[in-house]
Image (tube, rainbow, N blue to C red; front, side, top):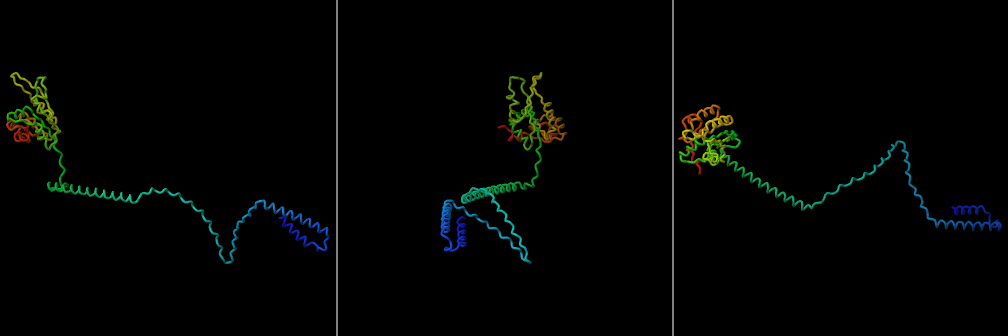
Length: 315
């Protein structure tokens, strides 16, 4: 700045100075001294500027030009709306683990083949079952939906007069298997109770299970009712179960549909009449030779053991 000022001042002074021939020598010397001093100061200023770092020139920001005024008859335009700041993109979800397509396709194909094999096997089984059902329908002569539901099985109670039936079997020379007799009498029925009334010896040292009238019924499905034998003055031995057997039948008759009395003794005639009066069927099972005419006349059914020996005989 000082150099420019000095040069401008020098030019002004030279313009104002009079011609050289008019200026005295003393004045010219003074001017030369001032000129040399100013040159030295300008040199020092230039040296100082070269040593100091140059300051960056300020950057001027361009100012928007003012909107032009609309001419007459021309619509005024609206300034453009400010653009919305761009939205930040949402963070991407982690990519699922990659699976080899060829391996997955092979697994799916294998699974499809297994399912087809299983379905074909099930279809074969269903067809075989259907053929079996058709054969059964033809054999029965009616379709399953046409078969009426079966009625409940009749309830039966079996009561065995052991001495009566065993003595009759001994007279016939046969031995009865009482387990088979129980199965024969309860076939197609619901067995409620099977009781065997057997006399036993009055000797306490004899085991009950090994006695004559008890042993055939042990572990055969019977409830064994025992009573000691009585010795009379004339030397006879007898055990009468008429009372015990009659009480049991009358007590259970309300829960039975059929009473099977295995005895041919005519003393049970009145018992059979009382049970039949309650609407319970009574069947008498005995050998024909030992069955009394009274029981045969009032019983609902008479079963002769001799006619079924092929099924009831002990082997």
